[in-house]
Each structure stands twice: as structure tokens, then as C-alpha cells.
Image: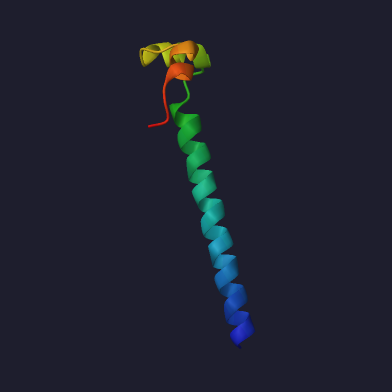
Length: 59
């Protein structure tokens, strides 16, 4: 009986992980407007460049 309980718990955990993945995919699909940004555009949006980021120290 103990082994069966462990298997049921593992199956439940797997199903829960699968459901979480599905929810994430559906949310991303629903929110996706097709617009993509380059990494450089994102860095510029935060007021930096690749060079300015390279100059930052690891404080």
C-alpha cells in the first residue's frame, strides 16, 4: 500500500507541474502581441548600453 501511495503522489505532482506549464503557455499566448525587441533595445530602455553594463562593478 505504501508504494502505491508514493506512486499516486508522484503522479499528482507530475500532473500539477504539467498543469502549471500549460497555464504559463496559455498566458504567454494570450498576452503575445507578436512584437519582439532586441536585447540592445531593452538595454537602452533601461538607460544603458552594452558598454555601460560592461563597465559596472560587481558591488
